[in-house]
Image (tube, rainbow, N blue to C red; front, side):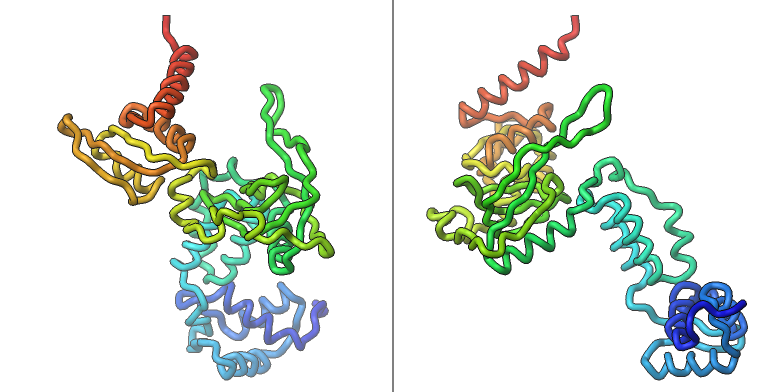
Length: 335
């Protein structure tokens, strides 16, 4: 076979072969490395040249062990468990598209030994149907980052999703915003949000609903001080803000009193944080809890746990929640 890559690439290709095809249980002899070089890359070199290149890699600091059975890469930048953690994160990230997830996982798997790819066959994710189909997402993140750094405005197209009983999920163009001042990117509940000022309001738009982001280099952004004169968001503790508002509903927060089963307190803290007051109630296994939260977010959470959680006050929130429940009961009433 005639070579289709120059021989000067042999050193790099030998390193790739060691990374992808060897470990302590799978060493390769110089003859086997030469054969892979020929078959995979079309590089034909003698066994002595293989040995010389292995010596160069060792001198460069690569931990390569050699013996009668052959040579293998003994130490890697990431061990298998570290790579598994990274791959699991990619699999379960809703903001990474399915195709890009496959590409990333393929690149990560190449950093491991030959046994690792076999183990990946036994892993699958339940997040496949929830991954974004916005192919511009990471390009948009780069553009927004640049705009924030340059303190300039951006424009973009904002879309919303609609379902039809006879078609799959459709994306409809909604608005084109031409004067938006971006301030920060927030990763929350596996979704990217952009904190920005547009149309006189502070907004938190989901990035997977944004396309065609463009930097308006010659249009300076409105300063955060001007956009937020009452300092509601400038110095906010966003970790606390996001736990108080897990559904990204940024409206006025209220002190809410709940009556709940005692074993639900962990769920409440996971979603809304630990800054709450817990009081014992009359019933043996129930507790009263006072917590500050956005009312709609609390009602959505209470709806998930309606058998174990009761909203006691304020009265306006309780009435709204009761109305929601009554409407739901009407839909599911059994004759």
